Length: 348
Image 1 (tube, rainbow, N blue to C red):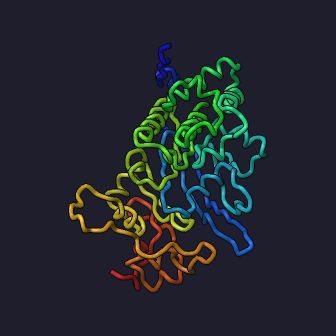
Image 2 (tube, helix red, strand yellow; image 1 turned 30 degrees about the vertical axis):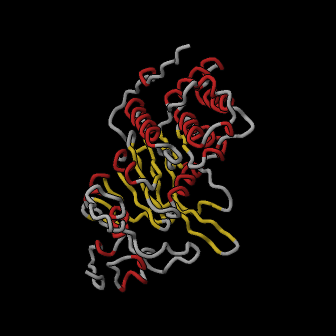
Image 3 (cartoon, one colour; image 1 turned 135 degrees about the horizontal axis):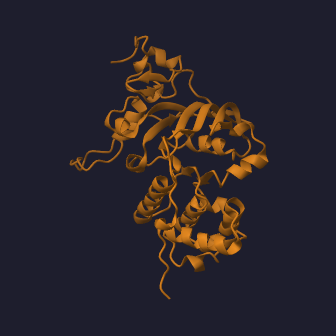
């Protein structure tokens, strides 16, 4: 029997006007209170995502990227809790909604691809049960129509023989296959906002390109916005319109993607970009650049700039004050080098 062809042409396009702000995060702070102390995982985080836009949040492990996305979706597990801020989705503060209303938004208007698909799929139910029921719940389709849509979505994310694989349980699939199932589940209800936490983890290069292409096509076709959480700067350069860089729970730079890669301002952003291997590096004995030092203990953050101990341009002010997020050269950057009041005490 010939394999059925799955095509984005089957997805009806959405007519769009001038894009407006879809998601606005204002002063979001998230803590984890533990016996050893309190971890300030996200500190006064603010950003916005416009309709049809791809905003990437990048940074090292522990920078607060995933915690921020889980806070937006209200999916934090204890002992994590949001202690301040607003998360406005089309003007409604998600942090103030009853759980029943929030559940109706998740998976429908907003959906998420999680970093660990095995922990997000129920091991005692088949893929069909989980994917078809999700489609029926949010799209109000009968079982036959929901099944057909589930088959089409699995085909779109590159799963061969999707009708057969719907009968599988999660443990019968590889990590990469489960990641594709999660992607199909997240995209199946045509969300207005997709939050993708390391969406290409555990996927080979060919499937990575396929998933990113699918997300890009759906963005163009249905106007879906994407909040992309990743440490992969290659993916960011290829897909993102704007970039937010986080370090130790704080936003340290925000800029248009092209500007950020062409002219990084924050010393941490510069270090991240310098550590990317380049085809122009021809000397075999030259080691890759590494940002010096270590990320500080989150239970004992320094009094001043969290990056101060690793920064080649630090000054006396950096050890005692936390810099604000300054407007500089058409972007935002948290560094005293761009304080309009002056940079006395900083190294040249």
